[in-house]
Image 1 (tube, each protein chain N blue to C red):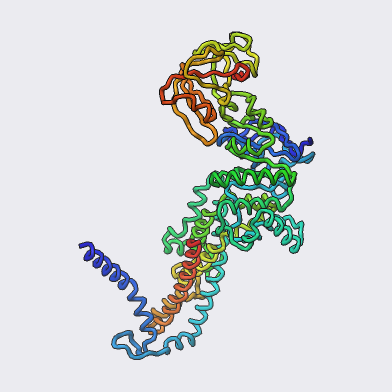
Image 2 (tube, rainbow over the protein chains, first blue to last red; image 1 turned 90 degrees about the vertical axis):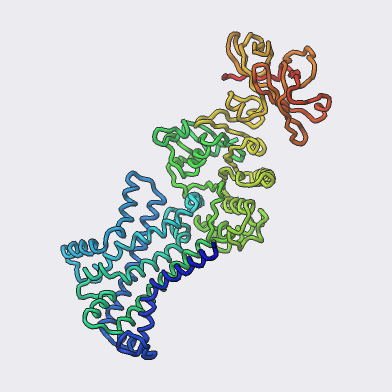
Length: 260
Length: 356
């Protein structure tokens, strides 16, 4: 009875994963398909669509922009996230709860609203259509993720550790550099990876504020609107690979922390 | 004796709660002073203010003649040994020990290595030098914490309940080791603990705090023999406290009869007083002997603790009396719970407290 139940549960779990992963798997599979149309039977293995996108200057530019944006965003968002998490760890002040709620708020706001809001705000300060606008928008949604990761790590730090460093002659800044940062390092790397991943495949905000400075997800949609080409599959696979890699890195970093 | 550290009316308030009432205290150079009391008495707060980790709400702290009240912790030379050890988990044992030297920039890399090596050797943890601290046992961690503080060659070492996370056996060993280290180094130890046995075993002087107030400061023996008040007597333990009305010349009328206590505070007739009966001065017998200070009692329990036996009696007014006897003294008595007994003690052993 329980064996049959367990078996059913396993089948159900597999079915759910198949349902979730099939579109991605078919995207990757058909990106290597020689045929023009993504249909069975398979027309043979080919890298022609990858060649096509790598030769497409607009895609290459978009890819380069996305990489630059996600690199800047990961550093900025992780810095802000660390600062917010550390403030929470070290200090007690009135209004701390609202402060933390505010710091964690952005991901709960629908991105459509965020995107619209940023569009109107950035146009007031003449920032629309620049990569800086995309970076600013992404930092807003990414910083809370960084804060959450680093806060979790700080919560495990003995409250005596920093005072012990002060007591041994290290000033506040020296303590930050020699004790606090080394302690947080795994979570800082994880935050860098996660925020880079979130930024790399973020579409909505980039679509609103990037103007002609298209990032890769924006470029993909533009391509889709023009024609249905297997090149989309190739780009999609690349984006999936980059984001997936970053998330795996973050997972490994937080894992190792959990093990020790 | 010269005073190395002076607390002058130092106090600490957190909002409306008083952690430490204005307290003055002098630490003599080279002494081992234990600051003790129950949890929440203000002893750790006092230590943290001396280390600069808490700001004093009032008063001044002086190191020799220098006012250090507002000095940040990293500018005070008072390394501390923590109850939680507070070792840096991402550093090796040797790097932990060298941490302070590195911050203070007092030594070159070669010197640091030499000094840390000496202290690791001295505390018997040389072979752990390259381990990470999470691979160490509690006792080993405590040694690393000690080495990390002592390598700075401080004038004053602060210790915050350093032994309370260790098991009983290890605690005793570390106690004698700390005591020996203190003797060898000749530096001043300020030791915070809630355990009177630790304090009495090691300290030259003890300071007892309760509810943010200093109750008594003096040599361990003196505090033990002549507690200043009821709190100290109870905290130190080892005595039974009886209460009655003074009738002059040391005689005190109690529910158990007229008793005599000659030591301590000379109470005026009519005053309500408390007096101590040291548990190691009481003798027991099965029949009344007519000795002075003899009271009828009923046996509650006995507790065998190795070389001696602790017997708990109930007196006529319900007071629990503690008596400490040699095993040989007990052999003469037949002891079963509820047995009626007579307890007596010499009049000069009774110690009258100044406060009720």
